[in-house]
Image 1 (cartoon, rainbow, N blue to C red):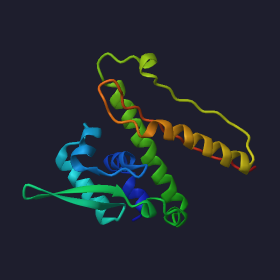
Image 2: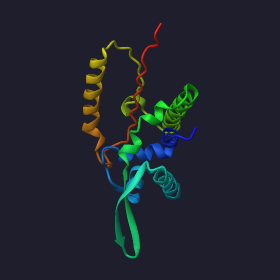
Image 3: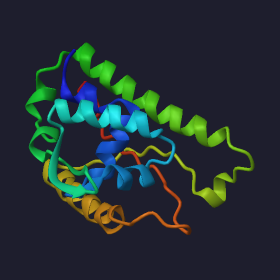
Image 4: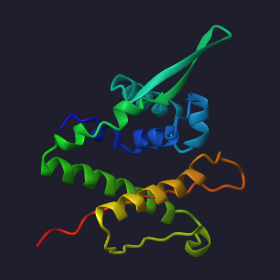
Length: 176
């Protein structure tokens, strides 16, 4: 499988893409301040892979003391290209989902392996709910959820803010 979805689902590349969501434009140094667990050489390598696949684009170049500082942004058209997903087989979809779930599991394991964790204070939770919605109600729900995300997604890192991973999965009930 040689899809952009598979490329993006790599843990480091997923973090880079998530950092740039919302029409953000950042330099490597600005991305690095948000991805403190990613070594700089690794960050450059994955940025280059995303550039080659046209998931990212360079939107500006600043000349600074003989070097060129690049400013990156998502190539929104490439990231949101749903036709790439519709061409995948069932097995490829399962592999992508497994990659996604493995990434989540790795994040949770990293959290649990820390010293002195406090699940309640840290707000750790995982839930599942079944809801009954018409297609229109579902679209309205998605729009409202998107608005809630937009309220916090642009928050900049600071000493009093803790990075929290929020993942959503919507799976329709199988038809009987």
